[in-house]
Image 1: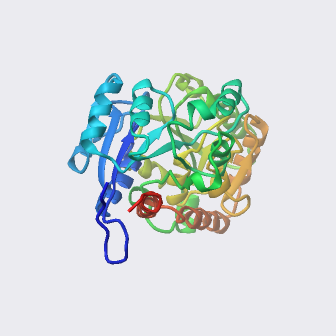
Image 2: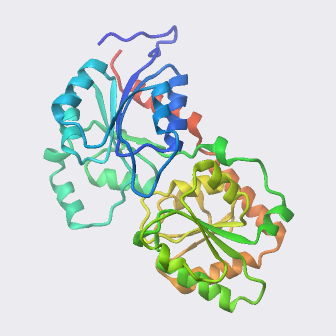
Image 3: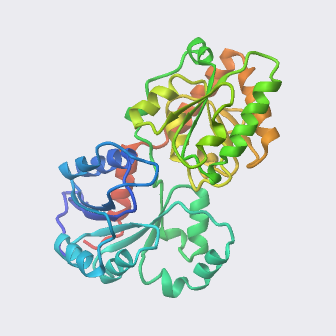
Length: 367
């Protein structure tokens, strides 16, 4: 395919097809930045995601071609769509879905095919099988992998992708929504509230959160902080009836930003969270962090003693103790942690995300 290049030999724009299993507000912000670079987008995604009902899904159509489905389109439909769109690159989240896989296979040698993954290596039988069979199941479909952080890069490397096959920085918060500037010491300390945001499911360690907060509240030597919970899911009842807990249900991004700026610390105690974009959102909002070592975003967004602490996943006593430590910090230390979070969060935003992806695709394409 002939591509237009500028005076510096750079490709004028690229056409990117995203085959997705959901689209969120932060992705919308990132995709819009791609179009500001002149790139043309095709977004294929389902009309809803479980327990996550974001407003504005139809608005993606004002800057991108879209196919929104209730049931995944068959391979023939997707192949015709790709032939019509003629992408330079295709990005597929995960490697499941027969229609998506066949559409990727049909573009071999015609488009750069990118596996988007935030998965982490857990040495499960399925992962060992994927590693053993990558030459047959993964290699024919993908030319490179797009990862969120160190842990998902390690997973991709175990599946056979080399260092040169890795595109990093796949997850970015919509910083415009969450960044309201520095938090003053007295303002931050006066909130006296922990915040949890996520689906209320087992792998988010909701029972651990409930037990740890109840223990902290019963044993603290000072006036206890409250706990705000943003999210829905089958384990909501686990948190009901605990003194100091307020359940807000699912919050739209601007509402979640309000909740973050009405809190003093963000908690994510997940048993396993492949990445946890909400950690980037919370850090952007200037919140000190308490996260478990099961959260994939921890290596890049949480430095112990700088902007919070890491606790052992599943350890109630460790989390309760960390809550006590955080609530007893002087306001100057809370403010220093807040600035630490903002500093680490500044490493990535939708503009950086878009420029990086564009350039990583561009340098892999023949002119």
